[in-house]
Amino acid sequence: MADVMRKLLLITLALGFGVPVQADIQAPPGAKYTSSRKLGRAISNILYGVVEIPEQIVRKTRVDGSKAGWSHGVVDGTRRAFKRIGYGFYELVTFHCPTFHGTFKPPYTRCGADHRIEMNPSDGLSEFPPELGAESYFGHSRTQRY
Image 1 (spheres, rainbow, N blue to C red):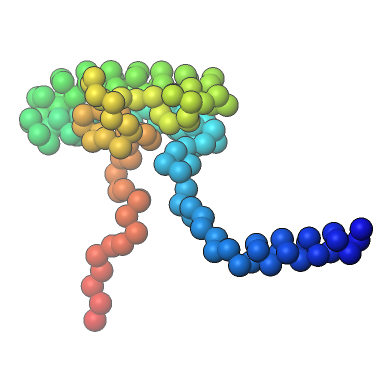
Image 2 (image 1 turned 90 degrees about the horizontal axis):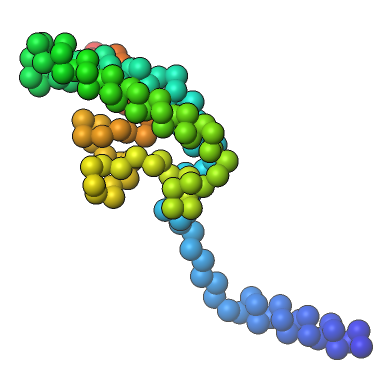
């Protein structure tokens, strides 16, 4: 009996090593969206959602002038801040549940279309609140060397 088991094991190993193995080494599309990312997104939206107000003032001033920036920018920034903070509390309560189509992706959509979070921040909400001042996500700077 042991001899038969040993032969069966050797045959299985021989066949296993002889067959080429193919594997999908890429992560699935929603792999970066986890419950911890959803929790981080919720906390950042709650804490930094009010940054939308000065951000929209600057954007509207740059495009339409200072009167539009200090009137429409304040109103639009306040609307976006309340929306972002509301989404933050919603995601804080539900961070452990995959709520958007069975995933942990953000629930923000563009007006009517089913575009996800990779949208232009001037049209809709980005995944995380905007940064004021120097943007730290650029890994290079302009320097002069002699």
